[in-house]
Image (cartoon, rainbow, N blue to C red):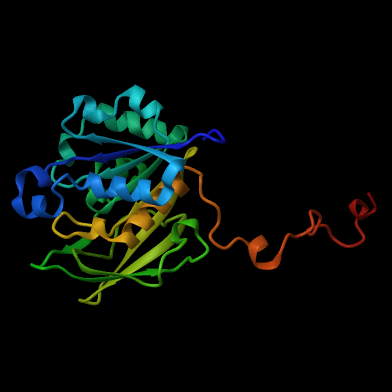
Length: 260
């Protein structure tokens, strides 16, 4: 990302449940993409510009031109994974390898693009009882930028249960683990590097519950966006803890470099 330029974000949503299911429409009358986009704008402010794209648009709103002007793409899909055109998946995959970040949300774990990036089935255990159940999101890497400004733990009162085993590669960086009322645990915040791009997976959020309206969840997603776009600083960098270290702190005493 060029210094001084706003982070360009495309919020992608298949936008199926909200148009066909009254229970979902009541929670997300303007689509799930609306609170996700509003949260990113609210948290990142003038440092970000946000556009929305949906499955029903030509080329799913992810044309070559649109992707060329996207620094970070967020992805929510569930009911229509198979309807995403393979050529669009290939286009997005190539852009990630070239440096575009992607934030995959909740049931997007089964999307074509996430499975392509992971190279595994991305299958998991799940349970969706009426009314949902409490999810407690534990930060296991508080120094990571994605954890910045978040409480420990984050509590989601009602959500769908996702549980292990989650068939993904070992994350390059693991930020969150969730626990549920049934005793299950889940790696709910995972980070990867693919080519020149960054990938974040963040699982909390389901069409049946108002999770994306929750401020802590909006903050976490915005943090994922900032990290994927390379716009985030470390949440607890060593230089902040102990002051600025001298430039030659790593040079062994008595080495020739000490005399320069």
